[in-house]
Image 1 (cartoon, rainbow, N blue to C red):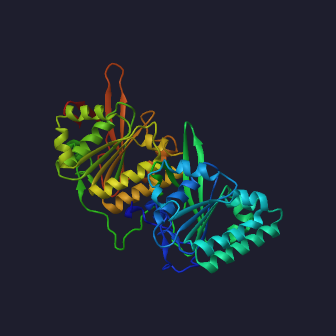
Image 2 (cartoon, rainbow, N blue to C red):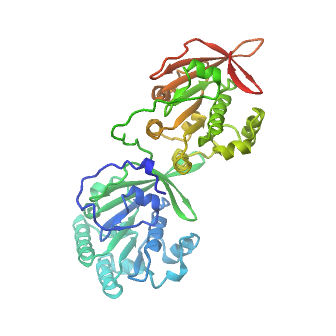
Image 3 (cartoon, rainbow, N blue to C red):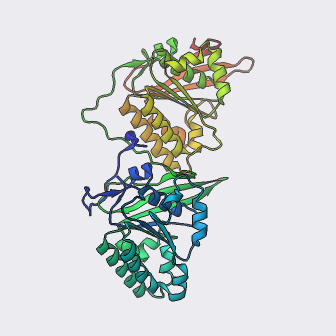
Length: 474
């Protein structure tokens, strides 16, 4: 996918040279996280609970690297039988039957191991290397072989002999297993592994969330942390974690004002908001947040600025009706640069939303962005700290890229102070505007500007009116 805006990778302690030749995982996003792929002639462990996606990841890797040079060997041991592995494999688009038996060779060594014990593994590997000269060897599951050994000393001996054999020959090995995090410190295979990747899975309500994490990759820059993914018929669809951008040397904030699309509101803001700033627009339901956000976005399109409107609140038909009620030709606005994106809040996952957002920002060179509403984005994050990190990184990316953004947030009353999400976003935002609703016989809407960074503003509470032409400050 090549998301340049999220390429702030953390450094690990180098043990290999960065110039070591790389082997693609067959997945562009995984390669991005791995800093270019797995080092060639390395030993790697792919760990995770059953059903977490280990086998699919390994299968995608071997078919992406299959060619006419040297074959790839895939050993199944005492986990799933070979016919079952191949049968499920046929449902994926990366599967190529023409490569089976020549470029990709499967071998079930489970019966031999069950009969002769784990001591049979080294002779099996020696024979395979001598006869096939493979460039990649996958053992699925290696932990099943490991568990056959009765003592720690025998486990260490087998791992040492296997490591010496693979290293002397020069092949890239992938050892799959149902390990957990505690096993990393207990089992000898982790000490000799050049790379350790974990695939985890956890249940959230009616859906499962899966994460891809690199624990170790010798001498490589890789993106730390948990990266969400889902399994599709194309294999793993990974969403690299958003991190804060590096500030360019000599970075200076823009000194240009951006109109909110409402002249009377611009007057309160001394001509509009600064380019590249983030505005939090809070208020209860029906206060006018979406109307202001739409006028901001439509003004950008009118000026020929590429504008992205991320909508999680109203379905597309409702939003299009609101736009047309404002007297705007939707098709013309889209031709001028307006991009409306709707995602149902029922199936939201924050990582996929962020990756899609930044892909659109890059492709369309977005200058204005609206998120309506932030509460729905917050509900897509299962971890409050993860949400805070995402929001902080979002605001920093917008500032560096010169993207002027409006974030709508629905409050439970006429105040912006509330739960942790509201407080965090209020702190991170450059501008905070609060809409309120009151009145018994007649609904009265009001607007006040709580803060603007680097600018004066009208501090009075002003009544607002919503009509067929939009919202205006009285």
